[in-house]
Image (tube, rainbow, N blue to C red; front, top):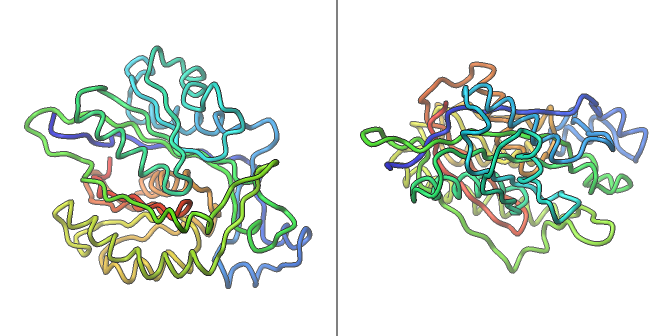
Length: 315
């Protein structure tokens, strides 16, 4: 096979919306304070009866429907998440059971905010090797469950949701739709973003993450374009991890993607960790902001100070 391509995407967010004004009633904050520091206006929050695998299954079902793909045609399910409560069955197996996918390889990928792009690369490599024919790749997180709702520096950031992509092997004679991955990490700085403890709680060193993201990531994003044989100005869209508008905008500007639509879904959805990239991509497709075949840079970064990116062709 020549590679793989995304044939369809889908996303899901819980119905409950938490505004900045709602948060101001919980902690010492305000709409102006939140917008000026992170750019977020609203976020969606799942209820206690909405587990991660349910969010993931809703997004996956939409992607399958958009692709016209039956569950029995999927032979690999990858779920990127860092907020699964149980260790077994994993989220991928639970999603497969919910959707009626028979006998898939089912694995979870925990690279926090860079999880989806890691999972997408893993699916691409698996399909290239001929170990699977069609994959379902999902990013899903319930960050509200690990948030410290007394800490105004972190609770204002988080949201819940899921995004999914159907990925198929490219037949001979067609070009690949998923470019080479560029990935890595700074493990000695893993303490900068944490979800740990009992009960697990999200914490981060905001200034350290901001400096790393805005100084070290732009050249890595440019290298990702180079691996795909494209210049940044060739991109139709840039979908970065939706961490903070103050990170997204300078990173996109330093990249030099002057002709690209830059995803800013963080303003409406908050930081949904592994869900943020597929969720934002799915919305761009749904809104008609990108067209089939357009080159789109996906670039995830965050926990473990990990990063992973690839240029994909829009479904």
